[in-house]
Length: 380
Length: 230
Image 1 (cartoon, each protein chain N blue to C red):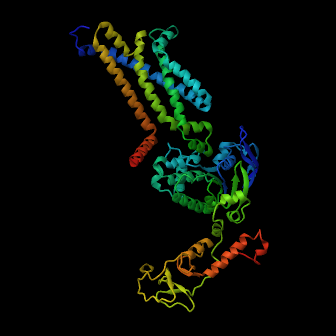
Image 2: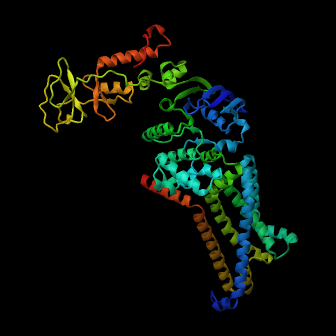
């Protein structure tokens, strides 16, 4: 656990970068520091590994004031990923990754073997081991940066806008990769970004900082979206807070209609307006108006124009947001739920979705308007 | 000069081979040692100038003044100290000239280390000394070598001025040729000085390539990138 205890950083000119910051970063979680430029987020990060020393207050790492630890020793035990990678241009990829093991005095062979393991772990091709950083793409360089930070298996990882210099598609890939790695490694990660969407996607907890290094709010992403502490946080979160909040509510509990799923050419049940046609493997083909009867042969697909397109979500892992999105892509406003094998599990009707959204809205206002809270009102 | 005198008398070269060889060796030693000494001095001075920025402007100004002093004047000033026709009398002023080229090269080289690389090294837990030796100096090498090439070529060529105080390496041949009204030694001297300078420069380029394969990889990548853009 990392604790900021009343930490202030004031520079000789009088500029206050961080102002009385008190914050607990739980072990094994990703905590994101987010805010506009000049909010002291990088300064705060660098006080953890003593690249910046606080003017007042303490930073505790597992209960110990970091100022009791000699900086090089402290830093070798904390992984660091910097913006633009910070790779050493004169060292090959493998030796870049093995930097901290070399500093710790591991023998060359062991350090390089460890570096190869990490290349595989972060999804870098083995062929790249002997390249120089200039011969890599931006995304590959960032992966090398992450591998280098993990080389000596430090319990703590500091990441300073690590993905901000790559294009959005690569960035999304790197973010997913980080979440996958974190699910395996359970490091204590402090992540700095100016991108609130990145913060909400990656953070178990998000600290929103404002100019002058004052903490505006420290909460889980769902809490942040549901109940921003003030106008600054609300403005910083931006538009579509309600919709984005749905990303944190699982769609797993939604009741499914199985009677609306029919085989090719099979009649629709009484009273149904639309049905989902599936193939022999129960994979979705498309929506069919109940009145029409598709006298189809084997091999017919939605592409021939008789079936309307559809949206689908995975009932086992997707959020309410994905279910709503799937519903909006269907002609009848209902969503197709898929199981683990991407077979149709059932249909979520508009009425069911309506009810789930109403419940989500009530829960989001639960703290503000207790009267609106339903008895035992959970989302599922 | 006699009108019937040919430009080159090959028999003179043959007869004076050992003397020419000695002068060549002398010129090489007096040309290269100042660059070596200059580099050894430029490293700490350059490091200090990077560490304490205020030092750099005064230091660079002073070195420029030294660079502007005529070499002959410096040789003459040193004669009472180091003696007439001594190697040291030539080497010391040339070391000052090398320094004037190499200090800015070391400073520029160290400043060519990208900030994020320096910060990453700090964050990885390098001690300041280790960071300097393993990260900053290696990255500075291409720029420093560029400065050494200029210093070396000018140093080898400046040695000949020492002939006027009796120790000028191949420059001695110019004096001989002028005194005897005889062009062969002059031409031999000029050709050898140029060949020596070109050879030393070539060796530095080669050393640079061996020391910094990554810089070549970068140059190629950048050339390819600009080729694509065009």
